[in-house]
Image 1 (tube, rainbow, N blue to C red):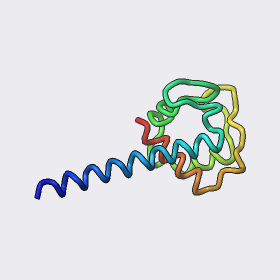
Image 2 (spheres, rainbow, N blue to C red):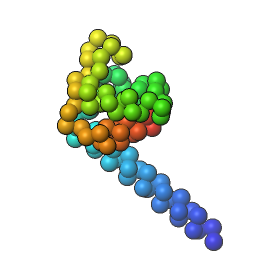
Image 3 (cartoon, rainbow, N blue to C red):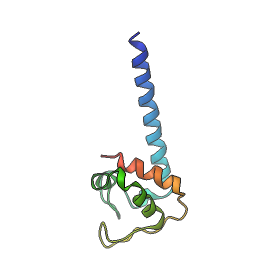
Image 4 (cartoon, rainbow, N blue to C red):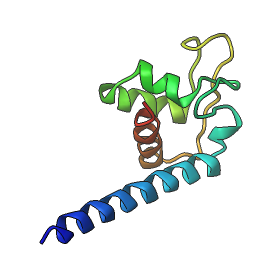
Length: 101
């Protein structure tokens, strides 16, 4: 009987890891990693720094910034707009970024 909960836990871990890899692949496909890295500043802030600064309450605002761009929050270099990113993709990216704490 103990094998079933253990199997369920292992399955959930694999699914979670698969989702994280898919979200990283989305970030790569949208060229996010040209300006951002997981744990160091490149042109823009690291994803870990973004995750420290913002919470789930900021998801909608951040998703909008992913699409429309932004400036002034992290320094003088503006983030250009990314019109090829669909709203649902932006939300998925932001949730993934905020999970990088």
